Each structure stands twice: as structure tokens, then as C-alpha cells.
Image (cartoon, rainbow, N blue to C red; front, side):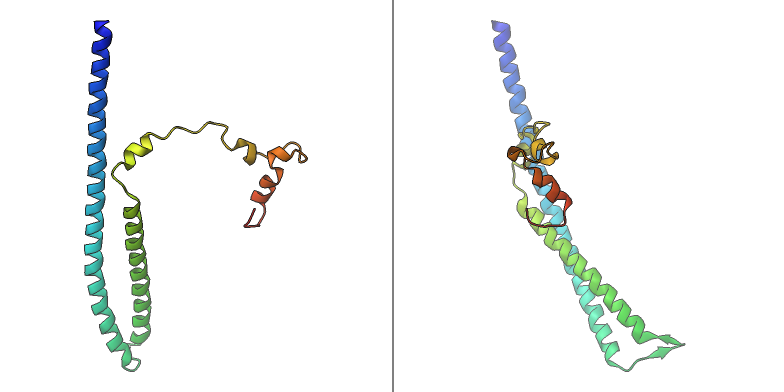
Length: 155
């Protein structure tokens, strides 16, 4: 009886320690995510300032007539460069937006919540995803399989 009580007490202690470790890891993950996002925002601000300066210079140069230097169309090259810089800026803005969205989805007990989710049964949704052997059986949704293979967007 004493052994059983001691064993239960040890299990309780280990369980509490694991819970503390999990909380600590969750907090560290949230802190790391916040630091990474702050770094990304700082990099984005610096990059944006540099791009703004570059765009201002490019606009001044493109206002002038089409220049040619040693047979190279400088104006055309600058336009290509401006287009590439615009694409890079749009991609980086999307990355920042995505980072903000991901950050808004984080919460302190996220890792704990994930570890508490049960594994789905192996036959989950099997009844609807497998084609029905008999199209006349109304319980099996035979048309769902056909819809998945079709080009229709609404079931």
C-alpha cells in the first residue's frame, strides 16, 4: 500500500515537472517568435528606407531623356531594375503581413493544446471519401466522390 502511494506521489511530481517544462518551452517559443518578428520588422524598415532612396534616384534619372552609354540602353536597364525592386518590395511586404498573421495566431498554451489533441480514428471520413459500391445507397453520399473528380467548385 505504501509502495503504491509512493509511486502515485512520484508520478504526480514528474507530471508537475513535465507541465512546468512544457509551459517554459511554450513561453520560450512565444518569446523567440516575438524576437524574430521584431528583427524582421527592423530589417524591413531599413530595407524600405534604402529602397525609397533608390527609387528616388531612379525616378530622377528616368525623368531625363533616354540615355545611351557605350551602346547600352541605360533607361531600359533602369526600368528593368525598378521593376525587379518593386517585385522584391511586394514580396517582403507579403512576408511581413504573413508574419503578423502567424503571430496573431500564437497563444501561450499552443504547444500544450496540440499535445492534448487525440489522434483521429483510422476510418475517419472513409465513408465519404471512398466511392460507393452502390450509387443507389443514399447513406454513402456517392456523389461526393464524383464531385471531387469534377471541375465544379461547389458541392
